[in-house]
Length: 111
Image (cartoon, rainbow, N blue to C red; front, top):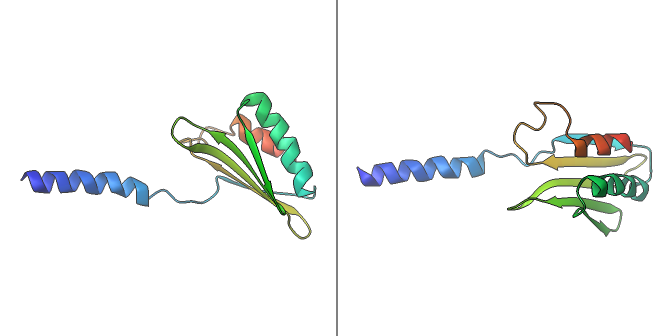
């Protein structure tokens, strides 16, 4: 009986890991250059969360805001042809159910 119970509990706990998709919460597109857009969003995010970080690589930018356990908000910006694409990943549960978060609003304001 204990084996069945512990196996059931383990299965329920692991199902949470498998059911979280890695799809972006928001998919954005802008005619601005990737670097200009990333800098605009970064400045706004820093006003909201001073610990925001901007990581830059060739044609790709990543804005990060850390939570207590992991990266909770990530904005990836890619240089596109002709437009720049941005993908916002938010880990906050029900974030989109109650309207736009302040971070999402900042990302949209820079479009």
